[in-house]
Length: 282
Image 1 (cartoon, rainbow, N blue to C red):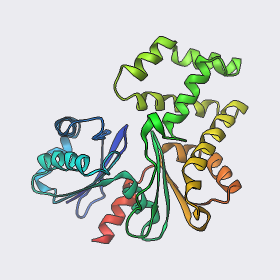
Image 2: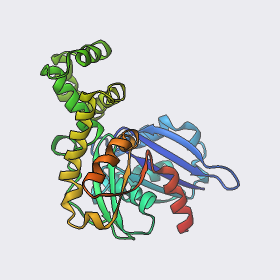
Image 3: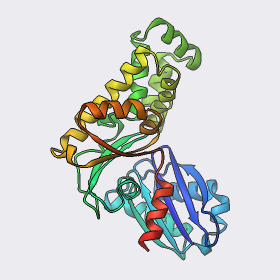
């Protein structure tokens, strides 16, 4: 049986290809090796995926595509953890960007953008992704992501820069004060996921002038700092993966059109398209 995983900073989607049946989907926390040790990754898999782990001896191939898996040392951490859980399987670990490129570009050249909890971009040459300058994480980068949007909302709220009615709505919903925010951002783990959790508020104020301004500013930041750094960006399809791109696709497509960006696929998560690619590739 073939197992494919797509892991972001917040969650991991798993898809098990069972012969003669529909693929079975599982879910766990994000398994980013920049935030977790090898043993912690192994422990999370075993504790959160009991039905899958129960079939571990039957899994023959594991293809894991994850955030934080681009460097050799982090790659090895995840590979070792997976091998401990699936001892009879061939294990392949690559970056989430490559997985997203397989799911969107297939075998064609193009740009692949991730807009989820974090953000990133890569150029796919039809076989592999070219090494890029981006993917700096939520402290230095993540433009246009859920973390970026959450940061914009929280700072506007704390600075008193939200319109009065939206400020009152945000306050009623989250009951935040400065001390809470400082503690969660600077003293607790997974600050990026904490910040990104506020992005869903934009769904509620999406059609207000304020909501539109925040979305346009965020996507404009991503286009300027990511897409436009590729001089020939207008010559290729630009695909998007992730909850932010999917949920706010209308605003994203409108802004891309203004910048002569040829939008290709926009998918919420790549796991199903990724499994099709892996199986078809053989």
